Structures are given as C-alpha cells and as structure tokens.
Length: 187
Image 1 (cartoon, rainbow, N blue to C red):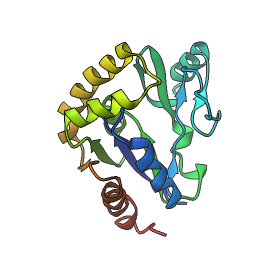
Image 2 (cartoon, rainbow, N blue to C red):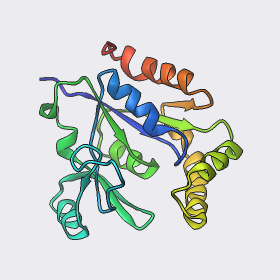
Image 3 (cartoon, rainbow, N blue to C red):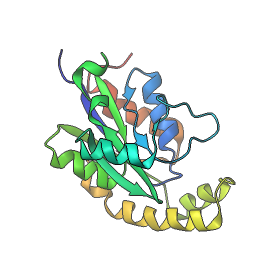
Image 4 (tube, one colour):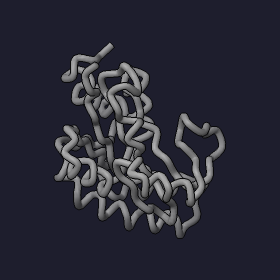
C-alpha cells in the first residue's frame, strides 16, 4: 500500500479550521486523531475527536517515540501519534493533521513529504470578533489566543498555501482543490 499524502492545516483559533477540516473529511480525507491532556468538551468522543490521556501517559508516549510531534499549548499537551499517519492506518489517500506552526515545523524536520496549508482570517479585527463570539472562553483565554494568533500569522508564509477564510464556501472550495482534486481523491 502506498503512503497517504500528509496535509497539515494550521491557523489561529477562531479562523474556522474545524469547519473546513470537517468538510475535507466528508469528501474522503482522514483526520489524524491527536493525543491531548486536556479534558473532553461536550460532544467530543475519545478516539474520534482526540485521544484523551493523562499527563503521565502522554509523557510516556513522547518518551517512547510514539509521537511525530508534540507541544504544550495553553498549559495542555498535544501531539500526533505516528500510528495515525502510518500507511496501514486507513485506505484514504489524504491524511489531515490539525496542528500548530511548531508542529508543522517538526513534521517537516522529520523529512515527511507534507503539504502545508495555513488558514488565515480576512483581518485581525475579524478574528477578534469571532473569538469574542465564543462565549465558552474567559477574557483571559481570548487574550492568550490573540497573542498566539499574532505569532501564528507571522509564520503563515512558511506554508505552501494560504487560504483566507472570509467566505466559508469559497474557502471550502479552495481547500478541496488544493488537497483533494490535485491529489486525485475527490469524490
């Protein structure tokens, strides 16, 4: 079996990554399930949305070399198990990684053939508006996310493509063309 094409999708919180990734999965791509030490949110399922593990288990996975990349984000650990990207983990042609800029750099440093797509907001003002609409987060959490967004935006040119999510239907179309159609996997 040939190895799947690995596509990293990154972008700041609130930019619409989850919506766009869900569309690609609906079109036949597979999302690699990350491991995390954060608690599951309402509606999230272990093994589907994330592999929810405690800190000790995560560190054991890291130390055993089971993670392709890992990072601490907002005080929680996140990482991509290598088994999620392995050729025998599914028959899909495209495997998506929803990881941050640091994770993207780590994956590239491993020599993995990867397509990097950065999802950007139309403006920082729009990103601020979107984050303020998230009533589930405190003001302090939003402030940290905006600080991280500035760092992530500064690294967007490291990616192969930048998709500006100012119109979700257009962004979906553009991502499908970049990720699926050019790979010959469109359904």
